[in-house]
Length: 100
Image 1 (cartoon, one colour):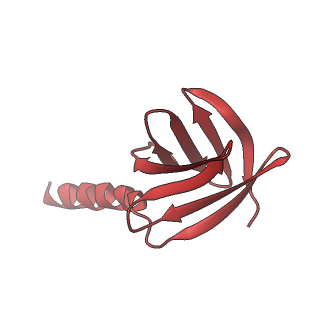
Image 2: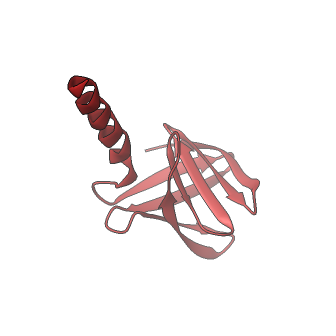
């Protein structure tokens, strides 16, 4: 029983480790014909990017899979090499593929 509890705790903590990026990084995506540059800030767990002439900074949110950042209006969600952006629950940038 004790071994199961320790194993369960290790898995739980390991699963949460992605929530806090270890360092800041810049990711370049190609969304159809539109490029998207996303800056991930590990210090405050945010993602920033320019959309429709507006600089957005979104806080990291819990996600069952991938990395999710959002506020009350926008969501940026990435998983592996792919990502998309939503505005008010509707996809506004899709088919985003990591190019770097």
